[in-house]
Image (cartoon, rainbow, N blue to C red):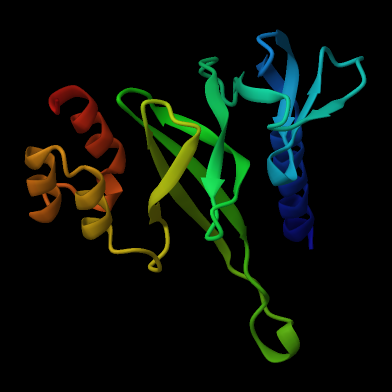
Length: 199
């Protein structure tokens, strides 16, 4: 019983630490910036306050273009930016994603985590936790991005075909992808190769 209570206590502490606001800078579409404390909430919202005593305000892609946030002990801020995802009906919506690589081609990532439905009789079993990462790319800092691959799941597109078509103006890189020198797990290295070695 003590072991169960201890485990629950550790989980609560962990969740509280992750939910705490971190130092951040918001960049507004009108050119203004503001510094304070922030965290990301559901549906790509940003919860922000100037200091621990201030009232929390919510922002989204309508007014904010990007923000920098110190997410770990390195004190090096990560950049999150609102980009447009194009739907099948060619409409688009702003989605908050993490910037991974910036250059001729920009690479972004959205990490999704959760717990699957409980298994077992009557759904009383333990659910399985999962995590996967969707990677998006755009050229010339375009507002619209396309999904290139997904890591962490067996489902998804034909990466060799998708990547070869997207990077078709760099034969050396396409050859490395088609010959499996680079695989989809190397997506960050692929974009860096393009940005530094392809014309």
